[in-house]
Length: 341
Image 1 (cartoon, helix red, strand yellow):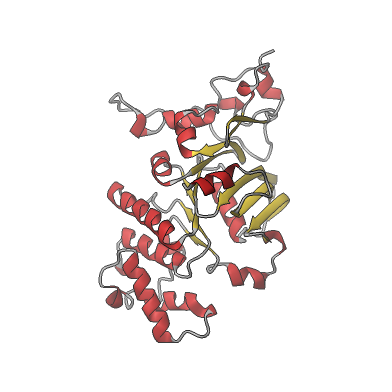
Image 2 (cartoon, rainbow, N blue to C red):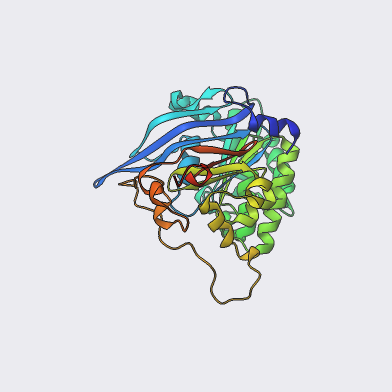
C-alpha cells in the first residue's frame, strides 16, 4: 500500500480519496417472522488503488454488504439508514438506468462460483463482447481483440480458440480466471471479489491471488476482497475489516490486525487459522457457539455470548469504537481502562 493510500485510509471522513465510502449503513430483511437486522451501523472505506479485505464467519453479512454496493439487493431488503458513496456518487439515489450505466463498467463483481455470472448456453466470446455494449464506437472486431487480450492477460492459453468454447468446457480454475477477465474487461474503478478462491485448490488459489495483485497494479483499480480465509487476506490485502453478526468489530492495516489483534473475535479467528497452528492434531480449533439470530439482536456486545473474556458490562451495554493506533479501531469494552469498574 502506498503512503498516499495509507493517508487516505487514515484521513477523516470527507477528506479521503475513497473509491467506496460506506457510512453508518444498516440493512434489514423483511421475513414472515419479522425483520432480520443483517447489517447495523457499518462503516468502511476502500481507498483508491488499495485492496481491502472483508473477513468474518458465514452469516456475518459480508455478501449482503457486497450486493448493497452493487445495487443488487433482494426485493425484501431495505436500507434502514446510512450512506453508500462511490467516487463521490450517492448510490442510494441512482435510478435503474444509472445503475446499468456504471455496473460492470465502473464497478464490477466476481462471485465465488463463476457459473453464477457465466451464461452456460453462450460462448465465452459472445459473453465478453456483450459486456462491451456501452462502447458503440467499437466494432465486433475491436471487441473481439479486447476480449482476446484480456483472456491472455489472466492466463488463458490460446485465447482466440477459447472464445468459441462454453463455460462447461473449462475447469473450475479456468472459469474463475474467465470471470475475473470479464469483471476487469472495462477496467472498473472498483472490483468486488466475493470469495473467488474458496472453491479452488491451494495451487490455483495462490495463482488467483498473484493474478489479482498484478491486475490491481496494472489497471490501477481498487478491490474489495471478501473471504473467510485469513491466509488469503494476509497475503493480498492492505486493510482488513472484521465483520461479525452484521457489525464491524475491528479494522485497520493488515499487518496491525494480524500482529496486534485486539477484539476477542479477531483473536479467535486467528487462533482457528490452520496455518498458525504449530501442534499436529486431528481436531482443528473452533469458536464455540453460533452467530446469533439477528431477528433479535442481543443486548450489549453482539459477541458476548461466545466471548471467552466476557464480563457483566458486555452483556448489557454495546461497546463503542476505540482507537488502538493510527488507523486501527476496535469495538470492545476491554479497551476501556475503566471497563471492569
